[in-house]
Image 1 (cartoon, one colour):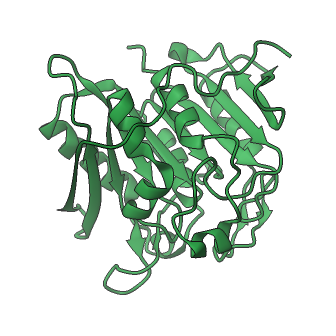
Image 2 (cartoon, rainbow, N blue to C red):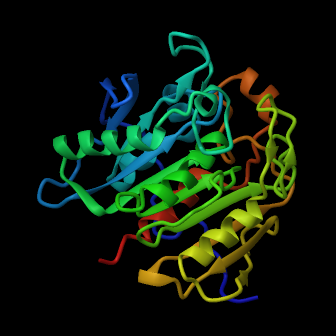
Length: 306
């Protein structure tokens, strides 16, 4: 064991959101009309650029659902960043219905239709940057499940814009990952996650795919980021359920961290499910680890070093 792990270092606890919520649409290059939800805190600094978080809902989720489930608005309010929640592609012909992302090998209609979600996110970042003063060294992505798989794809294919990702319950969905710039990665996964098993395999959800291993995902990202061989294990005195592995010595100050949570299900940790149906699909949320705050702690500590 090495240094102790403090999951919330440097990240203020969420406060009541007092900023502005807006919704918008844009037409992408493939002719689709895509929707997003934007939250801007009330008191952003006016004399300096601010971070941007792209928050990706899970399969069957929505921007509104993930905003409620993750609590990122409250963290944005207390930590001074903007968060945008894009929506995936619905299962119906008109694009409505349960939504998915084309993360590579998963999931659903977004994959079957080969939707260019990377292009959508690039265009969305452009739109936010055109309206607000965003720090290019602090453009991050977070995601859950299918959204986590999508965040990994962004790390591989949009590394000129995405600096670091923080995910729960996902895997690396593309066969070849060759980011043009190193990307830091934070991945948390529960050992009792049956929807997306931590070591891969057929899940209990409706995705109907053989999920890839979360452990392979983080090890691959550490390799492509040029990290030192082997991970360093840390303990978390505040929670004996956490097993933490960190790869350092990566190019341009990047870092990769994997947090395994004993007994945690697929549900977003530390936050109530957005609905009873959500609990039925993903299990009861693990209460003693706040995924959202831990993700922000990691992301905020890993801006790009140009």
